[in-house]
Amino acid sequence: MAAVLRGSRYLVGRCCKHVDFAFVSTRSMASKTQVGFVGLGNMGNPMAKNLLKHGYPVIATDVFPESCKEVQELGAQIVDNPAEVAEKADRIITMLPSSPNVIDVYTGPNGILKKVKKGSLLIDSSTIDPAVSKEMAADAEKMGAVFMDAPVSGGVGAASSGKLTFMVGGAEEEFTAAKELLSCMGANVIYCGQVGTGQAAKICNNMLLAIGMIGTSEAMNLGIRLGLDPKLLAQILNMSSGRCWSSDTYNPVPGVMEGVPSGNNYQGGFGTQLMAKDLGLAQNTATNTKTPVPLGSLAHQMYRMMCARGYANKDFSSVFQFLREEEGQ
Image (cartoon, rainbow, N blue to C red; front, top):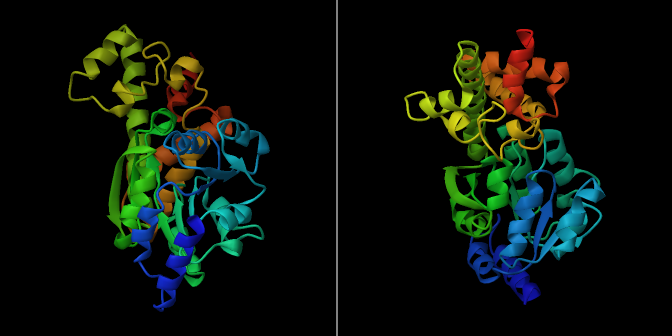
């Protein structure tokens, strides 16, 4: 059945100079055909699991073979590299740490575009430079495939519960086909515009998130030094105008909330190194567009400093611990 559907996409595509967006209708018909997944880290692993839970056969790979074990035990087929994924699946999701990783996975010697089928839908959920997303889209189009950027917000918890927010950039005609898959992994799937706009939305979100986390950490630390119980202070903040995601959902103070990295020595979650990377992307785009982002710049400096002080692999909420140590506590 999958072969017939792929063939129908190929025939439709031959009628037009570029990729034909009539492919979207046959993709919807092929709802439970194989889905490729590249990148099974802290985020990719639970995302792939949710695809499996929704009945999609998953073909996966990761540069670290041990990362594949859990999804393999749940029924995923594991292959050696992204090119092999592209040979077996015409809908592929990638979740990778950085722009260089995305470039390698798509265009490297064993990259997706070496074996991609015409009419394939390629969805990248990494957080990368919008310019790289546009470059990958152009390369994919030359091979007769469609590339969309769909970075996520919500962290590991939302990835596990299937409640991520996806910010999608790409041809609007392909959004329905992308949403079918992304809705298995997220509660919100939002179309932002052409390729690169999903990344733009994500970069803005993470810059605000970093600023908010630093502000929450500073406020909590000040309140504790003034003699307030941290749980009481968090309760007050969360019923007042200072309330934000960092205070009511992801509080950075150990002991205030359960099930968050601050309660687990800042292990798991969204790493400081990744936040520093995302803030670097925000700085680059701000420079290119001549946009003043003074607080974003300060947040970038702070998270880079944290990476240099041994916090790189801790969750980004460890900025609270960093501030405490800076004051000698």
